[in-house]
Image (cartoon, rainbow, N blue to C red):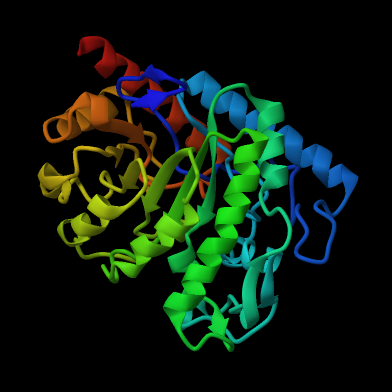
Amino acid sequence: MRIRNEDVLLPVSAVSAFPRPHWLQGRILGCGTEPTYRSHNLRVAYEDACKLTAREQEAAGLDILCDGAQYYEWEAPGFQLEPIFHFIPENLGGIDNFGPPGDGAKYAPFYKGTVHSKVEWVRPIFEAVAYAMQLATDRPFKVAMLGPAQQSIILNDQHYGDGVALAKDIARALNKELHYLQDMGMEAVQLIDVLPPYTQDMWQIECQQIMFEGINMIKFWHVCYGSVDGQRDIFDNHAAGMMPLFRESPCDVIHLEFTNKDFVELEAFADYPTDKVLGVGVVDAKNTMVEPVEQIADRIRRALKVIPADRLLVAPDCGLGYFSRTTAYAKLRNMGQAAREVRAAL
């Protein structure tokens, strides 16, 4: 994989979230009509938390860091989805920060933002996140965000009457956001998406193409099977059915959960497009047991039987934000060591 004009064999990265230090509590960043930070003290605490999560990733040997989603309220059990659902809509024009409950028992605690007019980019959304990570590290890092297709289906649309049209305007707004972040010097971005296993409609890829127009960052796409409090949303195997989406996606790296599903979908990736890197989850994000280095190394070797080392990225199954810091970073360190051992033997 090409990173900063160098070929990196078996690069290592994480997905998105890490647990916050105990002294960082509550909501950090404001929404549409608020200041970027809710207080100067929160800003200092948040930027310090980003430095800690960056240091842990550097120590583990990651090649592309992630922001760790330290602005999310992970300490509210059962409600961790709230900022994932609302952070982007609350900072876009055309969406009110209230609406009906989400669909189904799992999502009922989270309101749907109400779309009342054309969705537009009105202010930087992730500027504070990118800046905090630039203060924290000189290594490449990515910022994760919910994709426009996924975002569109968890909103209460009272304006468009057409979910695809709504998704495309969200994509246009996020394209402006990405251009802003690119101008800041950010080098990578990651979509988080639960939608593709449910539907393989190609309009999702049209949204990605709009969102990434003119964007030269490394583009990751995390196809999530769900992991809130260790609970999966998707139990069926859809990798083979998603392959047409993967072929047409403008993303450079497509990442999925493998370990918790015991690699049952691995063989489907014999048909994986050769112009893309596959991110393989080799650490379980739903199990608190810290896997030994050799066990993780065996998982990497298993993936190498299907995907060559120059197109394989090593990562956890999903974000590690639901674990204790001790568990999350022990998993990360063992994963990094396993990748180094496998790489040295190639």
